[in-house]
Length: 260
Image (cartoon, rainbow, N blue to C red; front, top):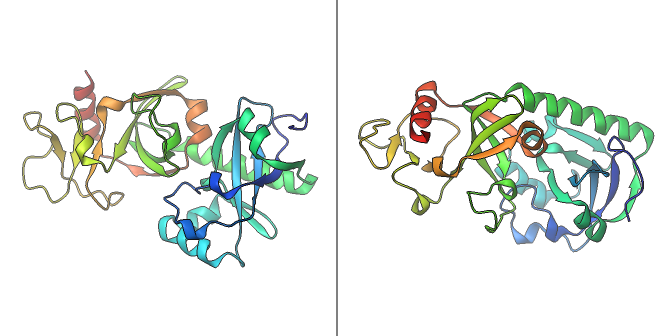
């Protein structure tokens, strides 16, 4: 059972490896047979933020995999140490209170200094996420929080790119990307393919193609305009992992026309 604490009191506990993906397609041989140390925020809220820790000098296989898929400089920048573990906020994920009560064991408060350092890191991280919350920005976002207009869809443990389309008052609209080209809605969605030789962003073409060579895409991807998802700013910032760059205004204007 969770201790009776306020949402400002970070906790620590143990969680089985099968529940932890580090927001990537994790190889099975990097899983440990032992539970992993995690920290928890918002213990009194409906959903709890869980942050797994890594022993930097003892888990070479896992570290190698993390550095292959994630920008290690950003991982370290948005992190806090609780020796011998490193906890990066880019690895965090959210689960409801029932999951935490059933799956996280050995729960206890952090020491006073440790809790202060964790809170400060989280505060700076949230400010960084909020500073880029503008139309046109692309964020990494947990797949588990994306509906694709199908609330019961199977959720993956990795993150995916989402485009911030609108920001109004306390609401945002985000649009997910996918590498599943076979899922494209040719009437509404936009294919990103820098090698395409046809017209750029033509409303006549089905699907419309964006040919601008964005560095944040290393392969063909689809912007799923038909899967636009509204969300409160609070919920978005509670799940978003990192801002990775903007798209051109011309693309944004074209998407707005598609959404009419």
